[in-house]
Length: 199
Image 1 (spheres, rainbow, N blue to C red):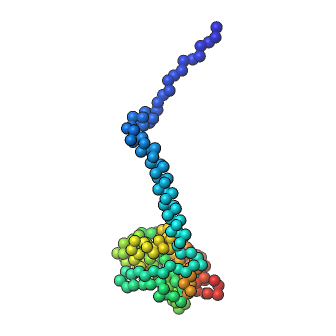
Image 2 (cartoon, one colour):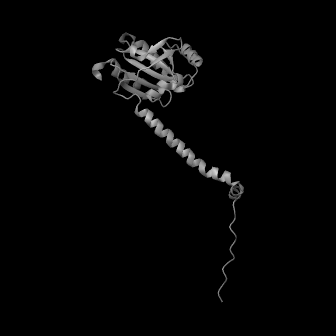
Image 3 (cartoon, rainbow, N blue to C red):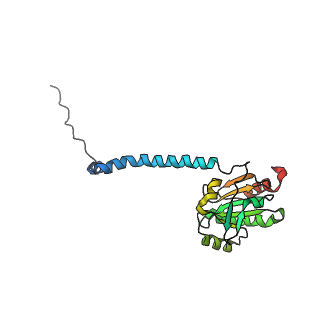
């Protein structure tokens, strides 16, 4: 006489599955679609961002020109600095790496004033009042420009502050630093814009 198989127990529904099954159909559909929609939005952003950066300032290409107003209401145009080496620094007062690299930029501006070095700061996603207080506190002496709607930041393909561009006397981008500058980064890029024969 063969032994009977042990009785099978009904499948146990875990509480989370039981709760999910009790949700209205609309909520269950939304829960299924949410990850797909998020992936689609991320993909669209990535494609758009690549399209912007594809036309952004590139090393070896002319720097996109701009005309912006500084914190004192004066107009500053990049083209007016032609013939001078230029550092364009995108920064914000709330950005800790921007604070850390600021003394390096200040030292470079002072040390190379005789070489015609121009430093231009462009405020990125910050309030003009906060930027003005920051410059006064840190002893900044160069033009600090307001970028309405981040139009210039988009033209340069900025990811976020700090980002720094090094532009030669010929108006061509010689170097780009994404993130905080170190002393070595600054020295290496300054060689490219201060001494044309080394480019």
